Length: 182
Image 1 (cartoon, rainbow, N blue to C red):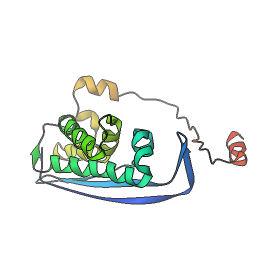
Image 2 (image 1 turned 90 degrees about the vertical axis):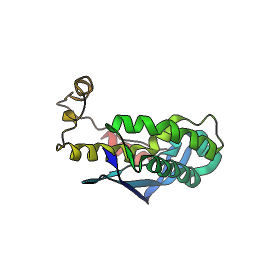
Image 3 (image 1 turned 45 degrees about the vertical axis):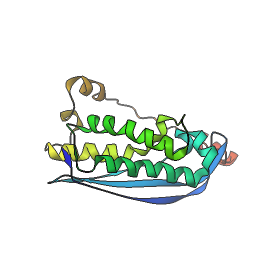
């Protein structure tokens, strides 16, 4: 699969109230949208960045907005590495670009101990688009048709129950907690 063109944009979605996590707060979410094209197909990948979750050192050092800018920069760098490049499958593409983006972001952030999760979080939208594009190139939307039998075994689990666990932030009021418990 040869990637012939890439594009990126993003949106910042304001939260209803500040979200507290790992001793810090943020009030919006950055959502990158990437487009990948081959000669015959295109796909869009959408994600939510989480700088505080992925590398709290970057969050502490640069703050929320600059941390998100840096993560988005990693996504842009990854797209440059993918553009006009050919890969057998999305696994190979992500495995090829991750160390390159990681080294670039360590320099850009001036953080030699950058957590790899920071890079990987910035690749989520790309990974999603790669799989969609790979499916289109192979004429299927079923991911189990696109992976080898060993990987397919790990993805084929089914459950008859779904659980919903509420996410409680530091800003969740006692009234809201009581409502959730009821």
